[in-house]
Picture 1 (cartoon, rainbow, N blue to C red):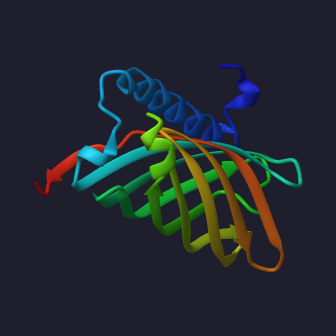
Picture 2: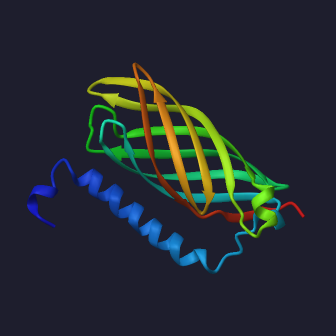
Length: 175
């Protein structure tokens, strides 16, 4: 690694490396897992990675962990995550978000499983010595790979749009 990347960018490089490793693990498991969530009811843990861009042009990368329950094609979870960027005025950004989503029954009847959801939560980032609490709202749609739009509200609105890859692992079945 070049010397100029070791100083203040080391944290971002570490975050990118961890996210890429998680993405590779996710992609290697996708084809070995039954993704038809209609046949499963129970608790799950879902790691994920996020790549997005905010409307001011900042590239954002992040990782997250969701813990939730899936029942009758609907899911409820709590997500803990971190977002990082070269925009040091807003990132790193730590958040907790409650999410809800449902499976599209129309598309499922055609053999396509599409999950649509919404989330709301809070986040904390620092600007120098000041800790700033923001409100976070997100919309997402997909299956394993999601299109994700997030809106952060503090002193101003900061929307971003991107992609998210997740892989839910069943923990306890309810059947």
